[in-house]
Length: 134
Image (cartoon, rainbow, N blue to C red; front, side, top):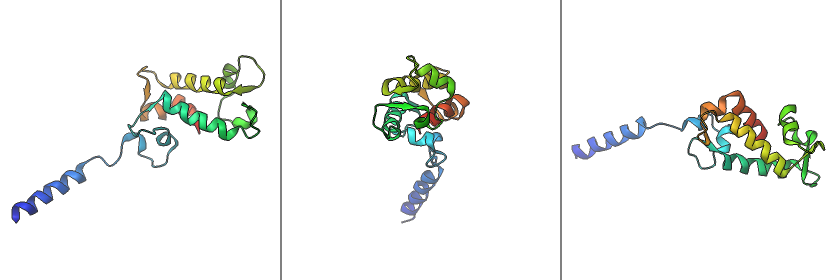
């Protein structure tokens, strides 16, 4: 009986010593944590694009297949919007918006490993990406 009790104590100690949450999800419900749909404590371009596509559909209230600056509600800087609008028509198609997301992702990934960790997402460029996708 004492061995069983001792084993239970050690098992409980192991559970209590385990990390409580991954680094990316430290703030429950944070925008960065919501991007991490596979819960691996990083965000890859596919996850960022999925969030961006869902956001595009949500923001395109008039369903014309484009977003203008008003519809984007400040999610892109003036410079990012201009770079993503090569035809200079004042709107972004889905492809143009996803191109902007790809560019923001690349800027936020200084080590070029194809993923963004909590530190990269907390950087100014990482925050720009998070703002653009939420």
